[in-house]
Amino acid sequence: MSTDAPALSPARTLATAGRVLRQLRHDPRTIALLLIVPVLMITLLRYVFDATPETFDAIGASLLGIFPLITMFLVTSIATLRERTSGTLERLLALPLGKGDLIAGYALAFGAVAVAQSLLATAMSVWVLGLDVVGSPWLLLLVALLDALLGTALGLFVSAFAASEFQAVQFMPAVIFPQLLLCGLFTPRDRMHPVLEAISDVLPMSYAVDGMNQVLTHTDVTADFYRDILIVAGSALLVLCLGAATLRRRTT
Amino acid sequence: MMNSLRPTHAGAVEAHALTVVRGDRTVLRGLGFTVEPGRITGLLGPSGCGKSTLMRAVVGTQAKVTGTLDVLGHPAGHPSLRARVGYVTQAPSVYSDLTVRQNLDYFAAVLRPGRARRADREEAVTRAIGDVDLTSHADSLAGTLSGGQLSRVSLAVALLGTPELLVLDEPTVGLDPVLRRDLWDLFHSLAADRGTTILVSSHVMDEAERCHRLLLMREGSVLADDTPDALRTRTGSATVEEAFLHLVDEAAADEATARQETTP
Image 1 (cartoon, each protein chain N blue to C red):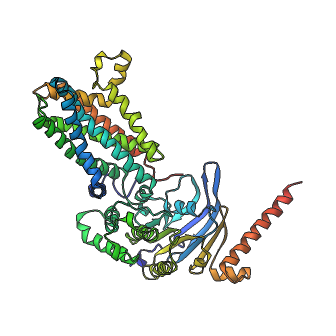
Image 2 (cartoon, rainbow over the protein chains, first blue to last red):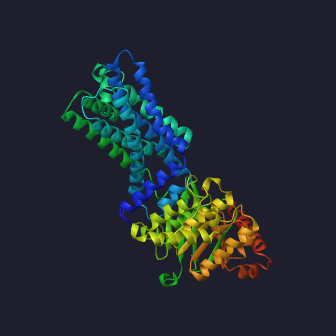
């Protein structure tokens, strides 16, 4: 595709990210829900497993990775669906804006929100609730950020297949729940039925949870950890590209 | 200032055998017309006659366009046209959860990115807000504005880049008479002072009298392409509305005769 503007212009990407965050700022309730709900859930979990702190450690660390994925999936799918239905997407694509600018802008804005969300939830878990992490909490944060990007990518992609906000929220159970069940949160993946284990091997959330568990149980950065975050980052990038393909300048 | 940039070729928009298919329906049937530069061309016709599809084809957002359609010397939808053509859709396409100024700031940053052009952008934003008479509402959330105000925000966005061609899809729907008059005055000053070519659709016939030229459409075809005066004279009518109805009846009668001739 030849275009006047390069596929990715830093100034336009930053302007888009700033616009998305400004929209969010006019909606303080959503910000509060994004930041506070994960903290409350992780606190709840701590006292659910009051008698077995080691269970809290395992599930808590995984959840720190899953929260940003789910929330960013929901927020992005609704936000981009609105962009498609309100006509602003058509207008933007008739302007000298690269598709990459739009997608990177969204990823940047929601990535920033995810950093704030994960900072709060991770700090609460490690310093207040006594989550026992052997590795560095910063690595937890890194995995959480990559998970958020994966959530943003998936949300952007599925919004192309939703005609309404009702449909968009239904994609959450359709896309996220199977991954949630198979990611090793409920039972180790190698103890599932071999078919399910094979399926879980190709779902990106499995590697998000594996990565969290690597940090949980190893002081050093392991080779497995690198593999896990590369897979999550790679999946996010792949789905973002698929999402870009759903943005059409010409529609019928 | 745009006069110097006006293309040297004849029409701002030139169409030949322009056809658009949507699904299994042919919405535009081999249209041919020219939009004169620096003038206001009204696109008139009943709802569903293909006005919006034609406008989407001109701005390059319509898929399945065949035939020739040149805009400012380039094929419609050419990337270099994106900054030169302003487009206002029927439904206001702005962010309801941003203020008027924040909306314009963002679209301005897309048109003229970079910190170096910040002053430039601020000036363009302030001027566009003034053009559509929303200065007192600049800091209101777009979602709290009335329908007419919202469509003016949408128009302001299209004015931002000082476009050479402005494509306006029913910009005055739902506006009170005073606002409609003000907007038409704005269109005329854009054409006269900035040399902007304006293609504006409407199904309100009294607005047709305010255009320099008219394209009358019916069922995907152009019925007439003329000045309002010439149309009235040719059809012997007092108003453009009468002229249009006259042409529609004529076309319907022609079709009926054609059908009779083909049936044995």
